[in-house]
Image 1 (cartoon, rainbow over the protein chains, first blue to last red):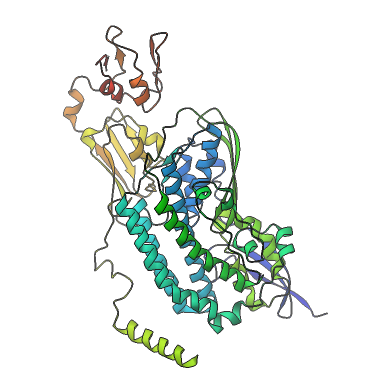
Image 2 (cartoon, chains in turn orange, brown):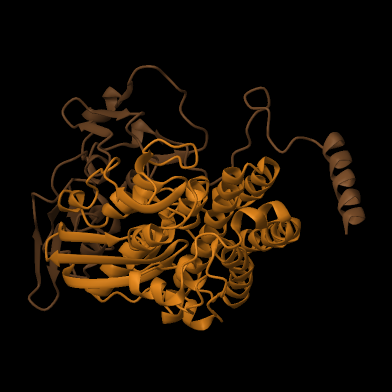
Length: 359
Length: 183
């Protein structure tokens, strides 16, 4: 047996802007084990729910993380609405769907850029982020914020999109899809990309299920599981099919996210085509009393929101389980047996979002 | 295969040589802001009734309202531009304007003071009082009240006010179809 040594990875590492720490157990250059530790950016946002009005907390829920912001606001609002028995108008449901699909596009483009950057493929990184700017501009125009949208509120959405705005979104989506074609081809066909991604970080389907992987991570192992199939917001009226790949490796995870981009474009187009007229919010009277569990599909996977109200304007408890939390055990499993040089890319393929995880 | 790759590559290189950069040369070129942009909060202080709803709704506690002194203070560095204050303002004197606040090296706050003559005007502030003769118990005032401070029972013909919740914004008086409420 070769001599074992422990190499620390993070919390500051060039591949991730966020702090996550791993103790890598190495035998020569091969990783035989990894011990993760988090807790560098804990802000106590769940506890803050006891100190802020439940309507006000939407703004805090949105600020748990920048990239998943839209989904966090939506998940929290859906939980409160279910406790209070509020029926959200149809138009608001469609608008929520359009915005969350746009945020999936921006999250996946961000991830693609980071992946290219981790491989040292700088031009691909810049191209991905240049295209991401287009979707951020659309957010700026429709919601007023590039990253933190602040559109969800208990009882509906704050802002409506008129027909010119919807057309602008459609046009941006068309342009983006056209310009994305060479990027997708490069990711899927370029031999530089393939040599870094193919065959690394194997996560078998059974392992993925047993370890509780979620989102693109699970779908890249061949399991067709997508929470959007539950039909929350307007997904019940739209045609959502889980995008899967059976490759089980890093390349498969990249492929799933690329195809999800195209799926999101289709969903945005379909939602804009079907969007009904009507109000975008209903007035909310009274305070929530009771508890509820909501599951939604964030760009990174399934997120769970739990709230417990006590009849006052302050909630008793808010709990959020983020996709990255569930993807850490499969990541540790996947790291076993890989080369030290592949570790940054493997960590990146779970699309870690540490600020969500630590809240 | 190799040949086509060479052509795409050469084409792209030429295109990128003569194309405008994807970025904007800010601050030499001005940034273009969309209409809805949440950049910073602006106040029309002459319309403000210092009710304090914005202060209570602010998630980052960036706003301080002093009723006695008639001042409205915002800490620009604490503000997270969520728009919560703008949504709750009963007088709609708060607005979200585009453009960010200037960067700085120290935490600064801006204080706006209400013009003095406003204070001496009659019928400004004070709790609402209902004229039982005129009131038809339509519940409009209760529906409009931003603080849910008014309770109206149509059957029992009662009108009651929770004085602690009331912020004296005067919306009930404005919404009353019979003009039965005076402040």
